[in-house]
Image 1 (spheres, rainbow, N blue to C red):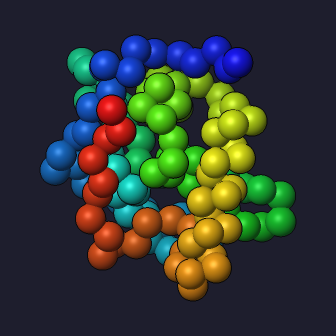
Image 2 (tube, one colour; image 1 turned 90 degrees about the vertical axis):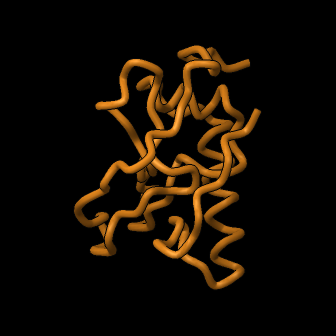
Length: 116
C-alpha cells in the first residue's frame, strides 16, 4: 500500500484562479479536470494538471478523474506520484486518446466535483 501525504479533508478547489502559460507541447494551460486544487490555508499554492512526460515526448496529466481524494491530496501536498497514480493517469490518457480527445482537459470542459 502506498503512503500518501496530506489529509483528504483539507483538499479544496480554488475558484476564480487564473491559469497562465503554455504546456510543454505549446497548447494553453487549462484548469484541469477539477479546477485549481489546494490545501486549506494554502490557497496561494495550487495545482491544476501536474504534467508528466512518459518518456516518448507524450505528456499526460497526473491529476485525472480516476484518482481518489486521498491520491489527489497527496499530489497537491507535494507527494511524488505513486505507481498506482501513474497507472491511472496513463490509462486515463490512453482512454481519451482512443476517443480522439487530448490527454489534458480542454478549456471547454467544465470542472468535475472532487471525489468523496
